[in-house]
Image (cartoon, rainbow, N blue to C red; front, side):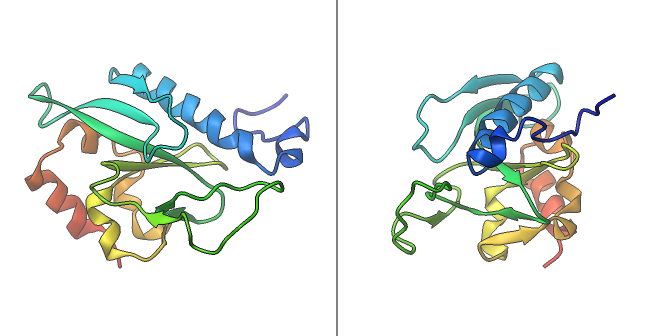
Length: 167
């Protein structure tokens, strides 16, 4: 019998340089957040800096806020904090021309999906300035499957999360 974490049993993901994983993880995030009771809207602009709009809360059952969320696949042990580049064998790369580091002006949350076990890392872009182009999962363990971040989107709670991050 298979397991939910099985990956690429057809070989088609490898054939396409892993590109379908991003789409699969976006669908997975939408489903999980909906199952948790959050309102989720897909953004149909693949070239934009975020994939979803998520109805979060300033405090549990408090004022509703709509956050821009970027979904990222965590392939190794770190969450990338950059956007604007696209993988694949058919791409022509011009070093650094389109890539950028996510910030509050682009998106509110980078939500990393660990492809090995489906853990979610809910990482507010308020904290991207603490790191380079990526951050190790071990430094952001406080963000791992931490739904409270979406239930307490306020400066007091987020400052506690910031203090718990490792640099």
